[in-house]
Length: 470
Ligand code: NAD
Image (cartoon, rainbow, N blue to C red; front, side, top):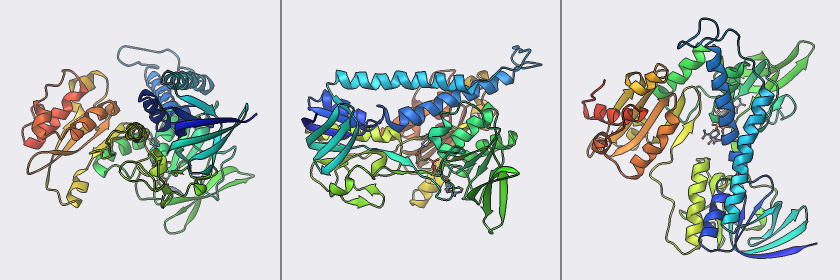
């Protein structure tokens, strides 16, 4: 049986962009319908940010317990090595995902948003059909918010399959591979590759460029490179993955060095983490007549497309492909539809990489500022001089906070950090930049002792030439 829904706002995609947009629309009294083909929560919640952080947590816990075996540590001794069961860890991870997925459904319900389960296929810009378990649903909307997100990019010569995983499969395994080759030393490759290494796999990275994690500058990467070295994890830079070879000798990945020399890396499984691309195929985008910007949907500063009352947010509209950017855009678009004057113009969008140790980038690095012709002063403070870090067994990983400010008026243009737990400092960094803080604002704000946050005013003081504890 076919049902017809007339709605003020139709949101396509239930990820952190789409569901936030829908909730805000509902709160603002707009009649709203959201369509999601998979589970509510999108890549972030179901097969990305959240499950990967859960697995990274498990890996960290297991690795730290191993350190207590034998002679012990911190006065805590384990007689036997802990047993590790990846299947059970994955089951626990699913409970976290389920809880959040249920929460999204409840929030949408509370905001009086109708959720339709199925894939929307557009006939034109304002009309789509959704094939649901209960039959086709025709939806016609005054406003459409496109939030279809992104899909994994692959390597044509190394197709996904039983032995070649994308990040999705890497989060669903029940048995550890003995040897895992990770193609791509970007965000996903590094986060998941390091987690597998900590859980006990032998991990090797293959990266086409001459460095890992290109989003972060070299001084920040030093502690991460040091961790890889200490854990004897090879990283083959300037190396391209070619194909998977299976013969009498087993399975191996053939790779090519920059000069074309071929070699093989034995492996049980391969994780391909070479980027993501916007999800623009298979749902009728071509019939909506919106302009494109390369592979992305083109939008203006209000996330409006070239088609009247069609909006697009999140990974679909460009970099950075981050959940928190999508959510911010979603909230904004809902408010614009409800009549508010808004535009998307953040000073900075912080990015965090949950590696060993963690990395945070917010705003401009010193080099980026200089490239823009900004004369900067820079201050840095090590976690090794922070009491709370040392009391948590961290601080010895080479981590630090770095503040970059304009030399003329001391307005902060960037804050970066590397070290254990620094992801939790990212909100303060973003707040400082968004509020237009000067170095004196950072140093003049009394930070709680003993916390890791004390490193921020210290780094500001260092930029001003008089850090207290360094
Ligand atoms: P990425 O762009 O960060 O890294 C991909 C890497 O693969 C690059 O360094 C590239 O040079 C390399 N590469 C490409 N082809 C290759 C080949 N044939 N052989 C060897 N190396 C090759 O992409 P990603 O890690 O897949 O992440 C995708 C997106 O997901 C990112 O845009 C990121 O924003 C998002 N993400 C964010 C987080 C986070 O916020 N913590 C975590 C994971 C992913």
